[in-house]
Length: 96
Image (cartoon, rainbow, N blue to C red; front, top):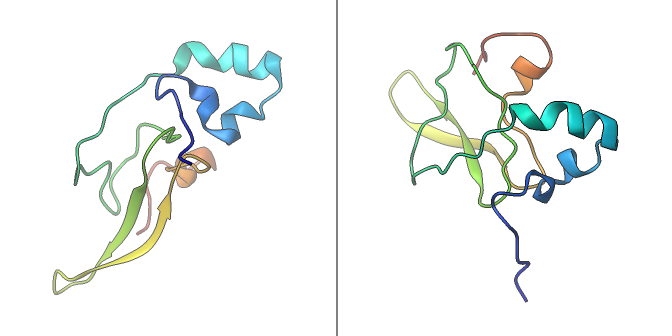
């Protein structure tokens, strides 16, 4: 049976749900819920990242594009994940 998830509840992402209440309360005013369209690009390789993404529903593919333009999926993140780890770790861009 599918799991019912409220897409506007940040705690639907287990990483956010596991935060201590004090930290969650401090950070939650910065949360913004966004709806993404199929094939929408969040950022390009080498581009500056502005946001961390904590999916609450759906899956985001991480693609690698070769010099010839071919793509290969190198990972994905769902509601148990995070996108933008380079930003989280203090960087401003992603190398791939």
